[in-house]
Amino acid sequence: MWMVNPRIMCRQHLLGEHRELHAIAGMIRKRGALTASREFVEARLMHERHAEIEIEMRRREYLPRVVFPSVDPIDFGSVDREASLRELTRRCPRCRARALYWLDRGEHPLSLVKAGDQVASMPAVGL
Image (cartoon, rainbow, N blue to C red; front, side, top):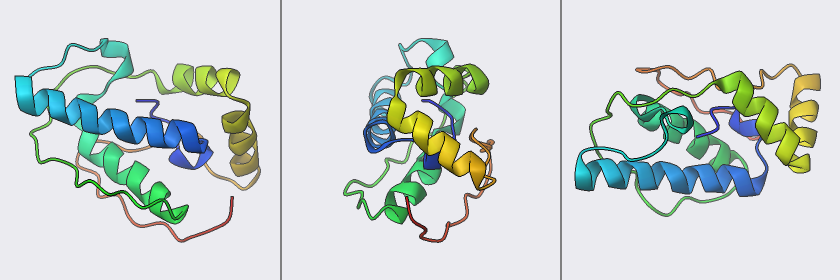
């Protein structure tokens, strides 16, 4: 989980994180635990993060086809959001360009989602 604002993520990273969230939920559902590195996952926020990612997918007119499984979140892991943002924008020129574009428009580059948040729908806007 990158835990950055989904608007700055390129298509590949946005869809990749969406897939990973489903995999995390599947592992928890099947095993009741995770075997991932703790610095790459915030399992307690998986429902809120999935909603945040899915809103951005719909805004870009990507249509998610699979319903997110109902699982109880577990307290596992913590992502350093600033380090994650630095790494993502270092690795991916498309994410770096999107981050600069949205920063110029006043968007915060990090995900601000917290446990229990109700993620509101965002209007459809370009890029």
